[in-house]
Every structure is written in structure tokens, then in C-alpha cells.
Image 1 (tube, helix red, strand yellow):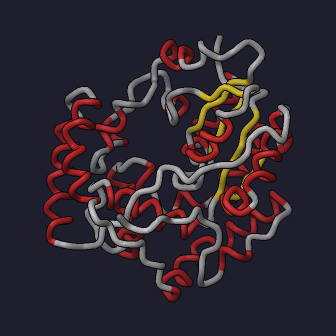
Image 2 (image 1 turned 180 degrees about the vertical axis):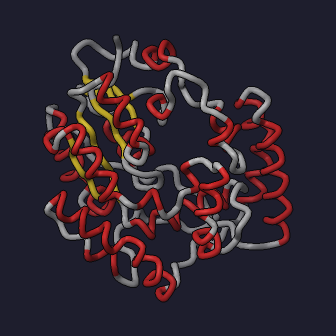
Image 3 (image 1 turned 30 degrees about the vertical axis):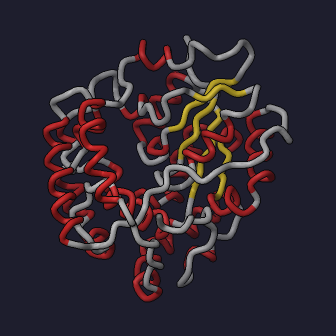
Length: 318
């Protein structure tokens, strides 16, 4: 069977896209041509609609690679001797995915990418706003809506707070696989000491170091400030995505491009998260960050302050 030797996981908006692209440059590694196939989020069946109730969820779920034959085919082109890998951030969050990966690839190596959880949640919200899918134009209000959304069956990408509870997620992952099979990479290190961070990942995977020169900013979306135009376009995009759930995914992707271009045109520079709000939100992670520190032997005190640290440079708005 052509299955991965390693997995990149962690959380969305934590740098897995940049890491995937960087590692794909290594001649001893083969990264699946489809990023985020999400195979191990499934149980050999199509993702159920009961867990895809948020805007655009059902449309997005059509792109999940849930058939084993299609998943294995992603690795058919791997050169002989190359280590095969794929990237699906949600694998860290989904405990059933831990179990399925262990059942299929018990010796897999797991690279876990983590980012300041408040920064990550803020970026996650920005991403969905810029795609016209997030109907709430205030981050704090969207954060507060999470419990209701989870209860209603919105997909994990909407779980802004929960996705950042890395300590509990990593504890459960290492309990199943053992600490030696897990490498934890901080987003901040990927940004600030890129070559050293990539070499550490390569050493963990058992391939040559000093091969990858760097990583580039990837999967970044422009900030869409609140406006009447944004409201109207967002409603249109959400309605289209709902209808797109009943058509081949590429159809709505193609039709939505002009709307997205209009929504994102002239996007403003992303505002810095209010310091007082950030201090309130970081309290949701205080205990979990302590657990994360105990598991990794590192300090995450920098996550508990009023400002974030470590991000790819954002270019000026067009």
C-alpha cells in the first residue's frame, strides 16, 4: 500500500502550507500533490452533512479525499526510496484521526506545527471573513459564538478557541504514538529561524539537512473591513457556497472567483488585535499552555502577553 511515512499536522493558519511547500523541495521527500486530503478525518465514507452545517462546509467537504483508492493514488508518483508525506492540520485536533493513523501507519512520524493560539484564531477568523463565509464582522463576537456553532454541527475550521488547545491534543497524540514519533515545531521558529527549523524537521524525518534554503509565506488572505459591500458580497458568497454543495466543487470555485476578487480588492492592512481583548482571550489557554510546556519542555510564556510575536511579513495592501 502507498501510504504516508509522515504527516504534517497542527492547526489551520499555523504554517503547515508553508512547511508543506518547503519540504516538497527536498529530493528525499515526496509531499502529496493534494494538500489537506483529510483522509483520516473520514472513516471510509463520505463526510456526513451533520458535521458540515457552517457556511461553505458542505461544499468544502466535497473535496475531501475519503476513498482509500484515491488517497493511496496520491503517493503513486513518489520516487523510489523517497519518504511520503501529507499535510492535514486537523489531524491533531481530531482524536479519531489519531486512532485511524495509528491503525494504518503505526510507525508514522508526526510533525506538529503550533502557533500562538489567539493569533491563530484571529487569522482563522480573518481567512473566513476574506472568503465571505464568516457572517460575523467582529472577532470577539465570533469567538463567543463558538459553543453554539459546535453544537449546531459547524465544521472544525470554525472552532476558533478549541483548535488552539494544543496541550490536550498533543497529550493524546503522544499517549498513542509515543514522544519519539512526534516533533513539535513552533510557527514562530518557522518564521524567525527558518533554515534551522527546517533542518530540525529534516533531521527528525531522517533525511539530509542543509538542503532547503527557506520557506515562503503561503495561504495568506487579505483583510476585508466591514462595509455594506462586504455584507452584500458575503451573503452572496455564502448562498452560492450552499448551492455549490450540490455541484462539482470546481464549478463553484470557478463561479466564485469574480465575487471573491471584488470582495478582496483593495483590502486594508490587517488591524492589530486589541491588547485588552487579547488579554481576556489568552486566559482560555493558560492551563493548556502549562500542559503544553510540560509535554515539550519549552516555555510558552510569550503567548500570554498583550502582543503577538512571529509572523510572515505582510506585504502592503494592493
